[in-house]
Image 1 (tube, rainbow, N blue to C red):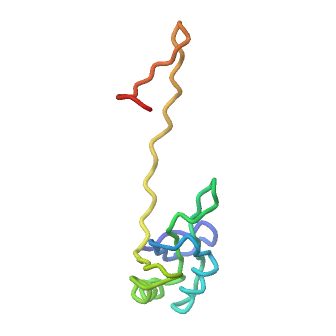
Image 2 (cartoon, rainbow, N blue to C red):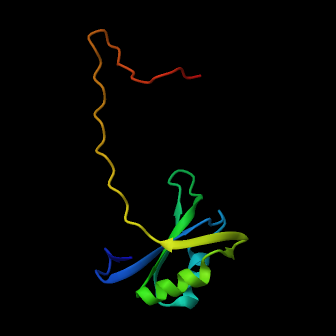
Image 3 (spheres, one colour):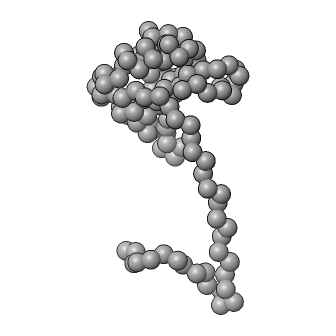
Length: 119
């Protein structure tokens, strides 16, 4: 599905790759998808804390036709020993606004609205 690329302000095509190995890097993803057309970007999504791959990534092509060729050519294929799945990327859904911190009562305790027991 076409989206507006923030960096180049050109119409680009983004596809989502799921089932990636934790060993797959941006460079390996780029190498695997380069034969299908002009790549704008190839990015493996990593955990902020550990830096390890989350098992999915995004590849951006210059045209719809190239993205479709890549989807057909790479869907259900092996990459780094794992079967990957390639689908059109969906726009990120907006997150709800953060909830304010509960204020302590006169006794200094906060109200915990958790249901059930922990531990």
